[in-house]
Length: 333
Image (cartoon, rainbow, N blue to C red; front, side):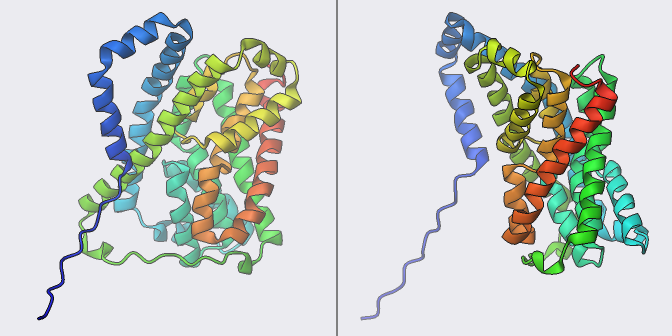
């Protein structure tokens, strides 16, 4: 007697949308209890206010960035950048660094684009300059920074100069000392993209970026609220009086929090007890090197690349932000 094979049922993995939907349902069901808890504890009420403030302010810029990023995935090919790059490698670094202004999107989208540029023949130094500049100096990020820091236009200028300087310095450093064998990972081929319409590519890219970046925004807003609850003002005042320590703490915090570059300005703005200079370091280091970015770079370029590139980027970003802060923001201000 021949046994018939039973079809194997595959379980779909639980995604971020499922978790979000579950949390939303729980919030609706226990709304009254949550409201009573928030109202009864002043610290929780303060944290909730900060969380909502950061989240509500940052959401429009996050959505705008996601829509533009999806449009780029659907309508803009990396070949466009490849064609305009000059033959001189140092000049190509400068052009690709400035090209980041024209391509809004977070660092999550810049990684595959920069790797694609390499595989299409662009110098690795130019592609890496684009990798660092695109998520940090694009219009969405600069406008969100201006909104987060009203009355502080020099903060926008300082972020632009420091982030672009970081991208150019790292590109020129790679052109001088970088080696092709340090990049070990191969680019994954995506079959079937040519059979999909541009609308399908746009909607899929936008949905993916929204879920990924939105999760980091929620985490960042929650972290900002938690910092205000857990960390007493005296500690922030102590950091404010020790500029070097404040710079190092904010740089490490930027790496650990791994916020989306389209929303990190609102988190930095909420740390009003600190001077502008440490917060500038936070805004420059975050889009250049953080834990999620290192993970994505390891998948696209290899672990050996990350082991060399990330530490140097961390130091260069701190140096560029600190120097720019003293020149543009007036040092300890």
